[in-house]
Image 1 (cartoon, helix red, strand yellow):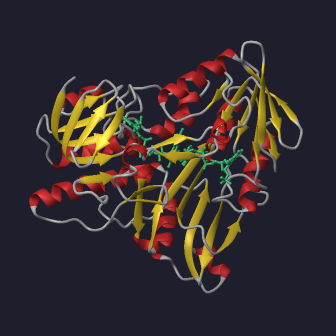
Image 2 (cartoon, rainbow, N blue to C red; image 1 turned 90 degrees about the horizontal axis):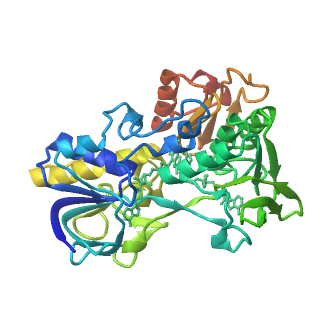
Image 3 (cartoon, rainbow, N blue to C red; image 1 turned 45 degrees about the horizontal axis):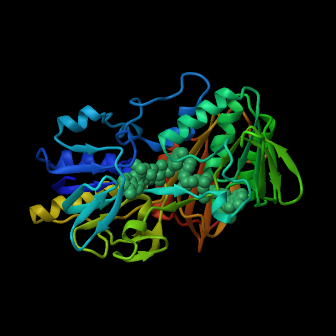
Length: 426
Ligand code: FAD
Ligand code: NDP
């Protein structure tokens, strides 16, 4: 059992870790100063690939192709990159105990890592239906998706079930993206979700209607207003039937569950202030303990633009919060300072040939344009959310880079609109 000391440790080896490492290097890092400790066997990678290109039937994406920071046009940081920069990448290593008072982390094998400054970037874990006690929810063939190993297992299951039945439980990001790739793999796909339309936390009914119509045309069945209440398996323990609360039964060779994620805060939850499910941080990602930062999915940060605390589970924020934390650390060392984080929420998704982006806040009245009867091949439509005469949020399907930039500007500046008609000129 070894004890090692580092000036900086990043706990977690996901998206935020990769971008934080790059920022440390850009700001100036000595060999041996930084370690990244990750439960995963792979160096930090762009997690969004797992629900998209990783599962494509033809030429699927594979590591090392999508290590960070390629997702934002940056360098591909392979394990070799880390060793060249003198960064210790401690993979396949779970931290099981943490002490903020001792400034130490203990791994499952008993090794102890001491830090000067710590960046917590432990991300989130999928919620399972067995967490709610749904009978049969641990059967073989029921998949969740978070890490590359989950994606590999799912890919192999898809290949082992050509033309089989797949059921996607949940109508959020995972449900919509996975239903698309399973359909592309020629599986017979059914989606099940309790709400009246998909992605209800962001979409309004007119937007959802376009995507649901598109999916149906592709042959995907959609069952709304009910939930999976149990699963039946064969004699090998493999799932075969999804039982719905409304009494229906769906045949299934593969089930994907996408019913949300829970931030990984357990190691520190009694040592750091927690709010809205994450570690409460300031505009520099400092937690309630000195020299301990939290970034990405686990951070509940001040969203300056809306004057409220928020936690965001999307990749753009994971990248930017990581950069902000590192810049804060380095500025303090240099006796300078950085500006407070001033984030404009940005989410996106891609499925089939569709691609949408959203900026800002979906509050107020949604004004949707072009969705009804939108062309399914070159779909282009959008929406603005207007509150108190100002644009708060902007959504666009099929936009160009310039159009999306304009959308971001409208949401950032909260452009005033006196009439709805004005919106078409933005
Ligand atoms: P993560 O990237 O999840 O990294 C956390 C890391 O910490 C992991 O390596 C984990 O193993 C490690 N870890 C956790 N606990 C421990 C421990 N105790 N010891 C050691 N290591 C530990 N967002 C978008 O905006 N667009 C998308 O298209 C998109 N697609 C997605 C697709 C999928 C399949 C998933 C799961 C998420 C997607 N997201 C997307 C969300 C986005 O990937 C996350 O918000 C982002 O990865 C968060 O970054 P993070 O560094 O905070 O956490
Ligand atoms: P989401 O929170 O996006 O969606 C989960 C959906 O499942 C919600 O609509 C939820 O409803 C619903 N739900 C909850 N319980 C049940 C149930 N028992 N049966 C059926 N549906 C249920 O989570 P995902 O699982 O889709 O995604 C997991 C994580 O991965 C998230 O952090 C997400 O941001 C991230 N991700 C992001 C992507 C992107 O940004 N493009 C792509 C893929 C993943 P309710 O809201 O009522 O709880």
